[in-house]
Amino acid sequence: MATDKSLYRIALTQIKGVGVMHARNLLKVIGDEEAIFRESVSRLEAIPRISRQLIREIRDPEVLRRSEKELEFITKNNLQLLFFTDPGYPRRLTQCIDAPLLLYAKGNTDFNHEKTISIVGTRNATGYGLDYCKKFIREISSKIPDIQIISGLAYGIDICAHRAALQHGLSTIAVLAHGLDRIYPQLHRNTAVKMLQDGALLTEFPSETNPDKHNFVRRNRIVAGMADAVVVIESGVKGGSLITADIANSYFREVFALPGRVHDKMSTGCNRLISGNKAVLLQSTDDFIAHMGWETKEKETLPVQQELFPDLSEEGKQIFSALERSGSMHVNKLAIELNTPVPELFMTLLELEVKNLVESLPGGMYKLT
Image 1 (cartoon, rainbow, N blue to C red):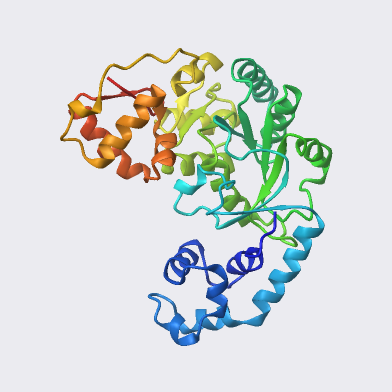
Image 2 (cartoon, one colour; image 1 turned 135 degrees about the vertical axis):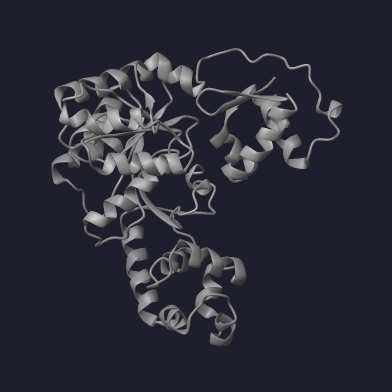
Protein backbone atom coordinates (compact mmCIF):
# COMPACT_ATOMS: atom_id res chain seq x y z
CA MET A 1 0.00 0.00 0.00
CA ALA A 2 1.44 3.35 -1.04
CA THR A 3 1.74 6.12 1.60
CA ASP A 4 2.80 9.75 1.46
CA LYS A 5 6.32 8.55 2.28
CA SER A 6 6.40 5.89 -0.43
CA LEU A 7 8.14 8.05 -3.03
CA TYR A 8 11.03 8.83 -0.71
CA ARG A 9 11.27 5.27 0.59
CA ILE A 10 11.66 4.05 -2.98
CA ALA A 11 14.12 6.86 -3.71
CA LEU A 12 16.27 5.82 -0.74
CA THR A 13 16.88 2.48 -2.46
CA GLN A 14 17.54 4.13 -5.84
CA ILE A 15 20.60 6.16 -4.77
CA LYS A 16 23.78 4.79 -6.34
CA GLY A 17 26.33 3.81 -3.70
CA VAL A 18 23.85 3.74 -0.81
CA GLY A 19 23.51 0.29 0.68
CA VAL A 20 21.44 -0.89 3.61
CA MET A 21 23.84 0.37 6.28
CA HIS A 22 24.34 3.77 4.64
CA ALA A 23 20.60 4.22 4.31
CA ARG A 24 19.93 3.29 7.93
CA ASN A 25 22.67 5.67 9.03
CA LEU A 26 21.05 8.47 7.02
CA LEU A 27 17.66 7.76 8.58
CA LYS A 28 19.13 7.60 12.07
CA VAL A 29 20.84 10.98 11.73
CA ILE A 30 18.21 12.86 9.72
CA GLY A 31 15.17 10.99 11.02
CA ASP A 32 12.88 11.07 7.99
CA GLU A 33 12.95 9.69 4.46
CA GLU A 34 11.74 12.87 2.82
CA ALA A 35 14.14 15.06 4.79
CA ILE A 36 17.11 13.18 3.32
CA PHE A 37 16.21 14.57 -0.10
CA ARG A 38 15.29 18.04 1.21
CA GLU A 39 18.30 18.48 3.51
CA SER A 40 20.98 21.06 2.72
CA VAL A 41 24.35 20.00 1.38
CA SER A 42 26.11 21.33 4.47
CA ARG A 43 23.88 19.21 6.72
CA LEU A 44 24.57 16.11 4.64
CA GLU A 45 28.32 16.80 4.73
CA ALA A 46 28.20 16.72 8.54
CA ILE A 47 27.03 13.10 8.54
CA PRO A 48 29.85 10.60 9.27
CA ARG A 49 31.04 8.39 6.37
CA ILE A 50 29.05 10.31 3.73
CA SER A 51 31.30 11.35 0.85
CA ARG A 52 30.78 14.31 -1.46
CA GLN A 53 30.19 11.90 -4.34
CA LEU A 54 27.44 10.24 -2.35
CA ILE A 55 25.86 13.60 -1.61
CA ARG A 56 25.85 14.36 -5.34
CA GLU A 57 24.06 11.06 -5.93
CA ILE A 58 21.45 11.91 -3.29
CA ARG A 59 20.83 15.31 -4.87
CA ASP A 60 20.61 13.88 -8.39
CA PRO A 61 17.07 14.70 -9.67
CA GLU A 62 17.12 11.44 -11.64
CA VAL A 63 16.70 9.53 -8.36
CA LEU A 64 13.27 11.01 -7.69
CA ARG A 65 12.31 10.72 -11.36
CA ARG A 66 12.99 6.97 -11.31
CA SER A 67 11.14 6.68 -8.03
CA GLU A 68 8.07 8.47 -9.39
CA LYS A 69 8.00 6.03 -12.30
CA GLU A 70 8.24 3.08 -9.90
CA LEU A 71 5.48 4.47 -7.70
CA GLU A 72 3.21 4.72 -10.75
CA PHE A 73 3.91 1.04 -11.51
CA ILE A 74 3.13 0.07 -7.90
CA THR A 75 -0.13 2.00 -7.84
CA LYS A 76 -1.27 0.73 -11.22
CA ASN A 77 -0.64 -2.91 -10.30
CA ASN A 78 -1.91 -2.72 -6.71
CA LEU A 79 1.39 -3.80 -5.14
CA GLN A 80 2.36 -3.60 -1.48
CA LEU A 81 5.35 -1.62 -0.27
CA LEU A 82 6.89 -2.99 2.92
CA PHE A 83 9.40 -0.63 4.56
CA PHE A 84 11.61 -2.12 7.28
CA THR A 85 9.88 -0.05 9.99
CA ASP A 86 6.36 -1.06 8.91
CA PRO A 87 4.34 -3.47 11.11
CA GLY A 88 3.66 -5.70 8.08
CA TYR A 89 7.34 -6.08 7.17
CA PRO A 90 8.57 -9.67 7.79
CA ARG A 91 9.63 -9.36 11.42
CA ARG A 92 12.13 -12.21 11.24
CA LEU A 93 14.09 -10.22 8.67
CA THR A 94 14.41 -7.27 11.03
CA GLN A 95 16.97 -9.26 13.02
CA CYS A 96 19.21 -9.63 9.93
CA ILE A 97 21.83 -6.92 9.60
CA ASP A 98 21.63 -6.86 5.80
CA ALA A 99 17.83 -7.07 5.50
CA PRO A 100 16.37 -5.01 2.63
CA LEU A 101 15.06 -1.57 3.50
CA LEU A 102 12.12 -2.03 1.16
CA LEU A 103 10.20 -4.99 -0.22
CA TYR A 104 7.66 -5.13 -3.04
CA ALA A 105 4.85 -7.66 -2.73
CA LYS A 106 1.89 -8.94 -4.71
CA GLY A 107 -0.63 -11.22 -3.07
CA ASN A 108 -2.77 -11.77 -0.04
CA THR A 109 -0.98 -13.04 3.04
CA ASP A 110 0.50 -12.19 6.41
CA PHE A 111 4.30 -12.15 6.22
CA ASN A 112 4.50 -12.92 9.93
CA HIS A 113 2.96 -16.35 10.31
CA GLU A 114 3.69 -18.00 13.65
CA LYS A 115 5.70 -20.78 11.95
CA THR A 116 7.55 -20.59 8.63
CA ILE A 117 9.85 -22.94 6.72
CA SER A 118 12.00 -22.20 3.70
CA ILE A 119 12.41 -25.22 1.44
CA VAL A 120 15.23 -25.07 -1.10
CA GLY A 121 17.12 -27.42 -3.37
CA THR A 122 18.66 -28.07 -6.73
CA ARG A 123 17.02 -27.20 -10.04
CA ASN A 124 18.07 -30.68 -11.23
CA ALA A 125 15.98 -32.53 -8.68
CA THR A 126 15.69 -36.31 -8.78
CA GLY A 127 12.61 -38.40 -8.15
CA TYR A 128 13.94 -39.09 -4.66
CA GLY A 129 14.09 -35.40 -3.79
CA LEU A 130 10.77 -34.47 -5.38
CA ASP A 131 8.95 -37.35 -3.68
CA TYR A 132 10.38 -36.46 -0.29
CA CYS A 133 9.52 -32.78 -0.73
CA LYS A 134 5.87 -33.66 -1.46
CA LYS A 135 5.74 -36.14 1.42
CA PHE A 136 7.28 -33.69 3.90
CA ILE A 137 4.83 -30.90 3.03
CA ARG A 138 1.87 -33.29 3.06
CA GLU A 139 2.77 -34.55 6.52
CA ILE A 140 3.61 -31.19 8.06
CA SER A 141 0.41 -29.63 6.68
CA SER A 142 -1.62 -32.24 8.57
CA LYS A 143 0.22 -31.53 11.84
CA ILE A 144 0.69 -27.75 11.53
CA PRO A 145 -2.04 -26.55 9.12
CA ASP A 146 -1.17 -22.84 9.45
CA ILE A 147 2.53 -23.20 8.61
CA GLN A 148 3.90 -21.05 5.77
CA ILE A 149 6.22 -22.37 3.06
CA ILE A 150 8.82 -20.08 1.45
CA SER A 151 10.92 -20.80 -1.64
CA GLY A 152 12.21 -19.18 -4.82
CA LEU A 153 9.89 -20.30 -7.68
CA ALA A 154 12.85 -21.89 -9.50
CA TYR A 155 12.84 -25.22 -11.32
CA GLY A 156 13.21 -28.42 -9.32
CA ILE A 157 12.69 -28.40 -5.56
CA ASP A 158 11.46 -24.79 -5.34
CA ILE A 159 8.46 -25.16 -7.62
CA CYS A 160 7.71 -28.58 -6.15
CA ALA A 161 7.50 -27.00 -2.67
CA HIS A 162 5.18 -24.22 -3.86
CA ARG A 163 2.87 -26.63 -5.68
CA ALA A 164 2.73 -29.07 -2.77
CA ALA A 165 1.91 -26.20 -0.41
CA LEU A 166 -0.95 -25.10 -2.67
CA GLN A 167 -2.22 -28.66 -2.94
CA HIS A 168 -2.46 -28.93 0.84
CA GLY A 169 -3.92 -25.49 1.47
CA LEU A 170 -0.82 -23.83 2.90
CA SER A 171 0.20 -20.22 2.44
CA THR A 172 3.32 -20.02 0.27
CA ILE A 173 5.64 -17.15 -0.65
CA ALA A 174 7.96 -16.97 -3.65
CA VAL A 175 10.97 -14.70 -3.17
CA LEU A 176 12.06 -13.43 -6.58
CA ALA A 177 15.39 -12.26 -8.01
CA HIS A 178 13.79 -9.66 -10.30
CA GLY A 179 11.04 -7.05 -10.40
CA LEU A 180 7.31 -7.77 -10.26
CA ASP A 181 6.81 -6.77 -13.89
CA ARG A 182 7.67 -10.34 -14.93
CA ILE A 183 7.68 -13.96 -13.79
CA TYR A 184 10.83 -16.04 -14.13
CA PRO A 185 10.80 -18.73 -15.24
CA GLN A 186 7.76 -17.97 -17.40
CA LEU A 187 6.77 -21.64 -17.27
CA HIS A 188 5.82 -21.19 -13.61
CA ARG A 189 3.44 -18.28 -14.21
CA ASN A 190 0.26 -20.29 -13.58
CA THR A 191 1.58 -21.48 -10.22
CA ALA A 192 2.60 -17.93 -9.31
CA VAL A 193 -0.91 -16.67 -10.06
CA LYS A 194 -2.49 -19.39 -7.88
CA MET A 195 -0.16 -18.40 -5.03
CA LEU A 196 -1.65 -14.91 -4.89
CA GLN A 197 -4.87 -16.19 -3.29
CA ASP A 198 -3.25 -17.09 0.03
CA GLY A 199 0.39 -16.27 -0.52
CA ALA A 200 2.56 -13.76 -2.29
CA LEU A 201 5.33 -12.91 -4.69
CA LEU A 202 8.00 -10.93 -2.86
CA THR A 203 11.11 -9.09 -4.03
CA GLU A 204 13.47 -6.27 -3.09
CA PHE A 205 14.00 -5.40 -6.76
CA PRO A 206 12.06 -2.68 -8.57
CA SER A 207 10.40 -3.21 -11.94
CA GLU A 208 12.62 -3.62 -15.02
CA THR A 209 15.20 -5.55 -12.96
CA ASN A 210 16.37 -8.63 -14.84
CA PRO A 211 16.90 -12.01 -13.15
CA ASP A 212 20.69 -11.66 -13.31
CA LYS A 213 22.89 -14.23 -11.61
CA HIS A 214 24.06 -11.99 -8.73
CA ASN A 215 20.45 -11.15 -7.87
CA PHE A 216 19.77 -14.76 -6.91
CA VAL A 217 22.45 -14.60 -4.20
CA ARG A 218 20.80 -11.48 -2.77
CA ARG A 219 17.43 -13.22 -3.02
CA ASN A 220 18.75 -16.16 -0.98
CA ARG A 221 19.34 -14.04 2.13
CA ILE A 222 15.64 -13.15 2.20
CA VAL A 223 14.67 -16.83 1.81
CA ALA A 224 16.94 -17.64 4.76
CA GLY A 225 16.01 -14.69 6.94
CA MET A 226 12.22 -15.01 6.66
CA ALA A 227 12.10 -18.56 8.02
CA ASP A 228 12.35 -20.29 11.37
CA ALA A 229 14.14 -23.14 9.60
CA VAL A 230 15.67 -23.82 6.19
CA VAL A 231 15.25 -27.31 4.72
CA VAL A 232 17.67 -28.34 1.96
CA ILE A 233 16.12 -31.23 0.05
CA GLU A 234 18.82 -31.88 -2.59
CA SER A 235 21.99 -30.11 -3.70
CA GLY A 236 25.09 -30.84 -5.69
CA VAL A 237 28.57 -29.92 -4.50
CA LYS A 238 27.85 -26.29 -5.42
CA GLY A 239 24.67 -24.30 -5.73
CA GLY A 240 22.40 -21.61 -4.39
CA SER A 241 20.89 -23.93 -1.80
CA LEU A 242 24.23 -24.25 -0.04
CA ILE A 243 24.61 -20.47 -0.06
CA THR A 244 21.15 -20.19 1.50
CA ALA A 245 22.15 -22.73 4.16
CA ASP A 246 25.31 -20.79 5.01
CA ILE A 247 23.37 -17.54 5.29
CA ALA A 248 20.74 -19.24 7.47
CA ASN A 249 23.47 -20.45 9.82
CA SER A 250 24.85 -16.91 10.06
CA TYR A 251 21.35 -15.73 11.01
CA PHE A 252 21.09 -18.40 13.74
CA ARG A 253 18.34 -20.21 11.84
CA GLU A 254 17.93 -23.96 12.07
CA VAL A 255 19.14 -25.77 8.93
CA PHE A 256 18.07 -29.29 7.98
CA ALA A 257 19.31 -31.43 5.09
CA LEU A 258 17.93 -34.58 3.51
CA PRO A 259 20.67 -37.25 3.35
CA GLY A 260 21.29 -39.31 0.25
CA ARG A 261 23.53 -42.11 -0.99
CA VAL A 262 27.21 -41.19 -1.07
CA HIS A 263 27.48 -41.63 -4.86
CA ASP A 264 24.37 -39.56 -5.73
CA LYS A 265 25.53 -36.23 -7.19
CA MET A 266 22.42 -34.37 -6.08
CA SER A 267 22.92 -35.48 -2.49
CA THR A 268 26.57 -34.47 -2.21
CA GLY A 269 25.83 -30.99 -0.89
CA CYS A 270 23.32 -32.21 1.70
CA ASN A 271 25.64 -34.95 2.92
CA ARG A 272 28.44 -32.41 3.34
CA LEU A 273 26.19 -30.03 5.28
CA ILE A 274 25.33 -32.86 7.67
CA SER A 275 28.88 -34.20 8.04
CA GLY A 276 30.21 -30.67 8.57
CA ASN A 277 27.65 -30.02 11.33
CA LYS A 278 26.10 -27.24 9.25
CA ALA A 279 22.73 -28.96 9.09
CA VAL A 280 20.62 -31.34 11.14
CA LEU A 281 19.94 -34.74 9.59
CA LEU A 282 16.38 -34.70 8.25
CA GLN A 283 14.98 -38.17 8.91
CA SER A 284 11.25 -37.62 9.29
CA THR A 285 8.63 -34.92 9.68
CA ASP A 286 8.04 -35.92 13.30
CA ASP A 287 11.75 -35.58 14.08
CA PHE A 288 11.78 -32.16 12.41
CA ILE A 289 8.80 -30.97 14.46
CA ALA A 290 10.33 -32.32 17.68
CA HIS A 291 13.68 -30.68 16.96
CA MET A 292 11.93 -27.35 16.38
CA GLY A 293 9.94 -27.74 19.61
CA TRP A 294 6.68 -27.49 17.69
CA GLU A 295 4.86 -30.41 19.27
CA THR A 296 1.37 -29.56 20.51
CA LYS A 297 1.48 -29.43 24.28
CA GLU A 298 -0.65 -27.90 26.96
CA LYS A 299 1.25 -25.14 28.69
CA GLU A 300 2.26 -25.94 32.25
CA THR A 301 1.45 -23.51 35.03
CA LEU A 302 4.74 -22.14 36.26
CA PRO A 303 4.78 -21.43 39.99
CA VAL A 304 8.06 -19.52 39.75
CA GLN A 305 7.85 -15.76 40.36
CA GLN A 306 10.55 -13.42 39.09
CA GLU A 307 10.36 -11.47 42.37
CA LEU A 308 12.35 -14.37 43.81
CA PHE A 309 15.30 -13.29 41.67
CA PRO A 310 15.97 -9.60 42.41
CA ASP A 311 19.52 -9.86 41.02
CA LEU A 312 18.30 -10.39 37.44
CA SER A 313 19.26 -7.75 34.88
CA GLU A 314 16.50 -5.90 33.05
CA GLU A 315 17.17 -8.06 29.97
CA GLY A 316 17.02 -11.19 32.13
CA LYS A 317 13.66 -10.15 33.58
CA GLN A 318 12.26 -9.57 30.08
CA ILE A 319 13.37 -13.03 28.94
CA PHE A 320 11.96 -14.58 32.11
CA SER A 321 8.58 -12.88 31.54
CA ALA A 322 8.43 -13.93 27.89
CA LEU A 323 9.18 -17.56 28.72
CA GLU A 324 6.75 -17.52 31.64
CA ARG A 325 3.98 -16.42 29.27
CA SER A 326 4.77 -18.86 26.46
CA GLY A 327 6.13 -21.94 28.25
CA SER A 328 8.92 -22.25 25.67
CA MET A 329 10.16 -20.14 22.78
CA HIS A 330 12.66 -20.29 19.90
CA VAL A 331 15.61 -17.93 20.27
CA ASN A 332 14.75 -16.14 17.01
CA LYS A 333 11.16 -15.50 18.10
CA LEU A 334 12.44 -14.35 21.47
CA ALA A 335 14.81 -11.92 19.74
CA ILE A 336 11.95 -10.48 17.68
CA GLU A 337 9.62 -10.14 20.68
CA LEU A 338 12.25 -8.39 22.80
CA ASN A 339 13.77 -6.45 19.88
CA THR A 340 17.22 -7.69 20.83
CA PRO A 341 19.91 -9.03 18.46
CA VAL A 342 20.38 -12.79 18.78
CA PRO A 343 24.09 -12.60 19.78
CA GLU A 344 23.24 -10.27 22.70
CA LEU A 345 20.33 -12.50 23.65
CA PHE A 346 22.59 -15.55 23.82
CA MET A 347 24.77 -13.85 26.46
CA THR A 348 21.80 -13.14 28.73
CA LEU A 349 20.38 -16.64 28.17
CA LEU A 350 23.74 -18.08 29.17
CA GLU A 351 23.64 -16.10 32.42
CA LEU A 352 20.15 -17.42 33.12
CA GLU A 353 21.30 -20.99 32.41
CA VAL A 354 24.20 -20.56 34.87
CA LYS A 355 21.65 -19.45 37.48
CA ASN A 356 19.59 -22.54 36.65
CA LEU A 357 16.58 -20.44 35.67
CA VAL A 358 16.47 -21.30 31.98
CA GLU A 359 17.03 -24.56 30.13
CA SER A 360 18.10 -24.83 26.47
CA LEU A 361 16.27 -27.41 24.34
CA PRO A 362 17.09 -28.92 20.93
CA GLY A 363 16.37 -26.74 17.93
CA GLY A 364 17.21 -23.40 19.55
CA MET A 365 14.28 -23.56 21.98
CA TYR A 366 14.39 -22.27 25.56
CA LYS A 367 12.12 -22.74 28.58
CA LEU A 368 12.15 -21.96 32.29
CA THR A 369 13.56 -24.71 34.48
